Image (cartoon, rainbow over all chains, first blue to last red; front, side):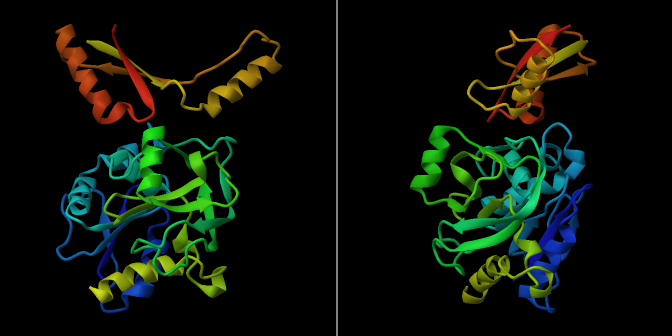
Length: 225
Length: 79
């Protein structure tokens, strides 16, 4: 698997994401870091990760400016051709702002920044991101966000449910997200956006391994391919 | 030409910030405040001098960046 991480001014989970990806890609293909001003992507990428952080200072709306940067045009093309794109936290906000994922992420209902470990329920294993978990499994993953309150109209929510596109739900909803939604998939199931940070739980000595299954699952998709 | 864009949350979209402002106003003694909705005002100084064209340009800017039409409405005012 060949992976890349996009870096914006204000990204701050980019290196953690690269470490998590490197763990499953191996030393033969280190994760490439791509600056937002690049207009094209390197050839032969399998997975692109949009990391957490506060791109462009969250100005205007979280992820709004990053979503219109030159590199994101290339990422949208990549996704539309069937490429795998993972957006975590600010990355999820960027993906909704590009329209690759439906809905929007708004200010937490309690207005506070939330930084803590939370239980997530794996709602579907029918994706290359979640195939390594068992359906209904509860995993512990940290959240760290001020704007993670997922909002979508009734039609979109019905579509997400009908197409089994809710990847993760909060066991105890921390931020007011509609339908307890913590992460959703695109229609082709290759774009995943989620507010919690799986890349932060990839080392037993740093709190646990509950996030590792996600990266292992994606890597497995390319071993099998 | 100065164009003012008002971006507001769509009806039905929860506005926790507006709710907090209302709560604060109530606690200051403004008891008649029943609802607060918070939005943004964006002023654009455009080189365009034709009002209709300026409005059209601002509309395109709203659709592409200034508003997230999933959750927000916008209104354009030529100043």
